[in-house]
Length: 127
Image (cartoon, rainbow, N blue to C red; front, side, top):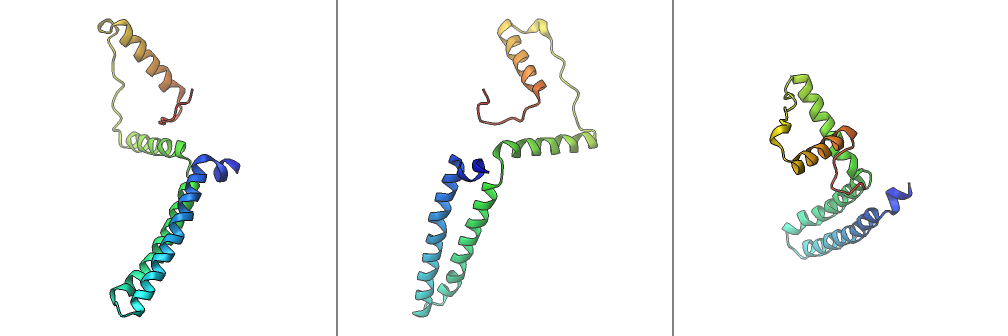
């Protein structure tokens, strides 16, 4: 629970929503005062700004409850399952070891080892 609400990412999201929502509400109140002064278009904006504040809260909640490491893995598993059902998975590529130099062979072996681990691909360094 602490990771979700007090991590660095969560604190940045809290600060963003703490600036966004009051800003939208202030802008909405400003549009209400302009609408009462006779600006007809401001009636629309006086409703629109509070809606933006609600959208900001919804985005904050969604981002707070989304694990960035698992999003890509879920989509990848779903895509692979759809391709397997449709019979669209290509055959595994055949490697010719005699055409590879030592450095390329070591790199390909490292990639094969990482693929065999089955961990989700992320931009974060796992080591």
